[in-house]
Length: 240
Image: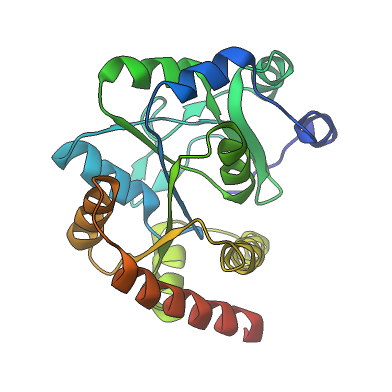
């Protein structure tokens, strides 16, 4: 399914130097926050689903301008995977500073964390968790330096491609965009020092690892292994 962002110029203008409202920053300062970053198809949403079902986490559902997709034979639902909103509604909330972060993704859609969702997460009494792409991570860190940030890595390049092409139909142009986004995301992530790296080779294992790290456990061995896998995938992406 081809996705087109009709008001791209307006989004690019408002997202340049975007800053959330004082209320959004105040809410964030009053709660812990966990973010999963990772290349598309790394399994972030599956990990979040597991953590929400089996541990002390509350999923923060992002807004997006793209329409729902068929994933693994099931259509995405509003308020579950995302809140699917019109471009004009998202633009209006951005103008009012009602997003913690928002960004252009794959050159075809804008997604972001709304203040509305932060309020809901705060009331849950659990640890808010969400998956965010690279520009969003930078924006969240600007607002909350103590955010716990994980970078999720597939177990290998081959397994990643199998997951990516097996979960949904996409055009050659879409696949090219995904690979380019992954290359840029890996390069930038490997240049930063604030990530906890984890390998998603087993949903249960990686989810439990994340929960332990959030509760204060050491992640040095997993971090070292996952960074090496990330470097291998980056090398293969550059050569593909």
